[in-house]
Length: 80
Image 1 (cartoon, rainbow, N blue to C red):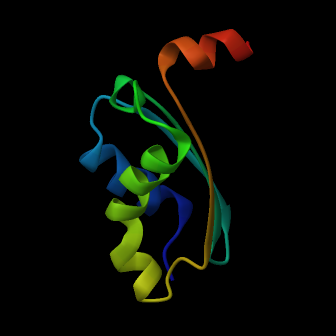
Image 2: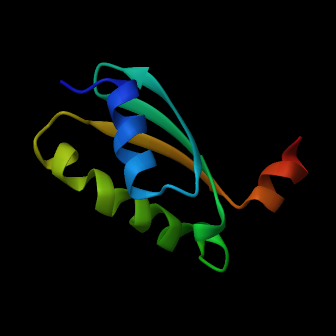
């Protein structure tokens, strides 16, 4: 099994310009990623970007479910 900290490290390594927070356990995780890499991408493309990184761990069964909030810095600021 993989833990939230490991997932956060994997995503941070792959998306170094993003602020990433991962919560959860037992194969079910919530990801918040904020970065300009998502600018101009629709929600599906944003999720595909993250799934591409996590797919080996999903395929192995280490990750069962992921919910994601993938935002630009501007979108994240608007929520505050």
